[in-house]
Image (cartoon, rainbow, N blue to C red; front, side, top):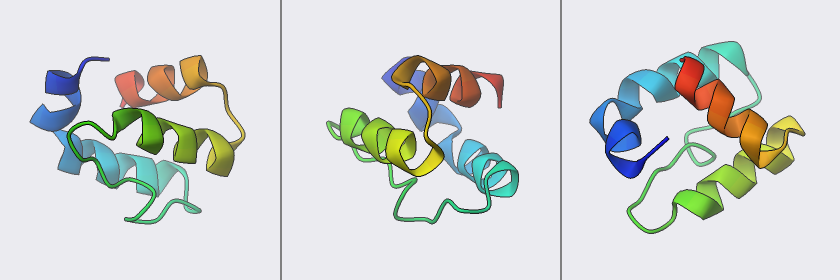
Length: 61
């Protein structure tokens, strides 16, 4: 997952993630340039997944 992939269709991906994982909020999924790792860390904590699992989840959406 690279920054361009995430930025390109992030709103669409964000909606799908919220649908799949109801515990996620807009704050959890806030993507800002330079803060990608922070967002991934929040998702790891919230979903109890590894960094690699989070990347797979986002890539599969």
